[in-house]
Length: 112
Image (tube, rainbow, N blue to C red; front, side, top):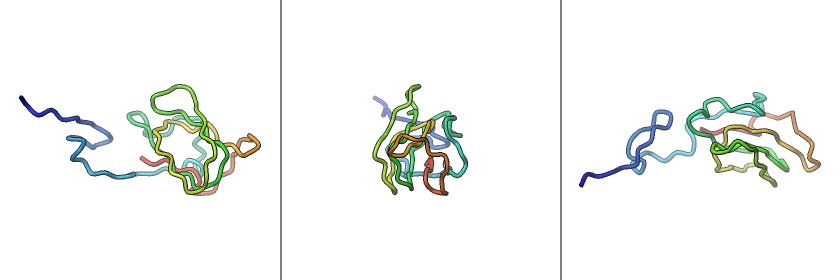
């Protein structure tokens, strides 16, 4: 019986999944500094990206790669890594539920 391996093609990575190098990210995009909200994040057509959150926010509303409806994550603290696969950040809100629109560099970063 031949060996069967789980193969993937994720932005150039191919082959036996267990033999592939494990990396946290190989590219990044600062969503806050570039104002990329309520739109599909570039380069998420094949697979979603994760988020690094460098600021403290009450709620981040995102769309996960397998969904069409937004979901909210609450209690986000500075320095958080959200190990979820998202395709869009729909909004970032303060403790009063107000939409935050001004971001400093490094506050919301997509990791690919």
